[in-house]
Length: 334
Image (tube, rainbow, N blue to C red):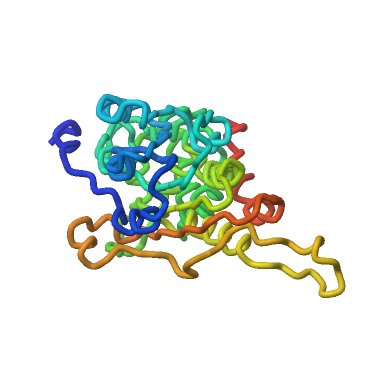
């Protein structure tokens, strides 16, 4: 079956009811959908005639979906083909921003579009570019040295066989360029056990997707820059799909929703102030009913907070994840 036919599979926006329940009291303002995709969140928000949506997506393939919404909702909907880390550069005519929403997962259409090469079921030359990229997975796998590949697989994929897989890639690419099928075979041969809980290639492909699309710096800068344009009282909502991105979002909300007293003898002005009001310490996860309808939602976690302070100092946030940012910057060596 070819990719075109597979693309007909329906995409379900994850945790839609839960998201609507969070923003419903805020009806009557501007919402920024930072990961437009198939437009599930945007469509739902636009059902109320008092709402407007600014949608962002780096993938130009979502343009047809955006055009449909433009025709239907007119000036209440606008679309920008950009990466969301640059959210603070968009022009918002109506400053009444009620919420900024991130859904960090890939849509069904994107996964099943084998030309993008996001899936280990893809064929041929490695790709994984989602749009506005500096390089592809082909360049990363075939040009970076063993240590750099190992770090990508280890830190971005938590791959236990990172060392062996990286070593085998270096050996095999001396014969010819590594393509998608070659990479899957290398990963498979690096496992002693015949069966694993998930597909053996899952973690390495996740790691490469993160690296190629610079997802760590995208998330970190996206959160920081969202804070800059979000007014006090506005909500920041993030849906994550794997432990690494959830770790970043969890730290961001938790770290800036608690008062850090360096010393009780210091004046209050030298204490870190709360930037957010956090409503739930634990993330919101899909209901049993949603899991039945949409099994891929099983790893989704929704975290949200309300901005309560304009003062900003994100030095410790950047410092916390500097190692990951440095690994992403390996693209400079390609």
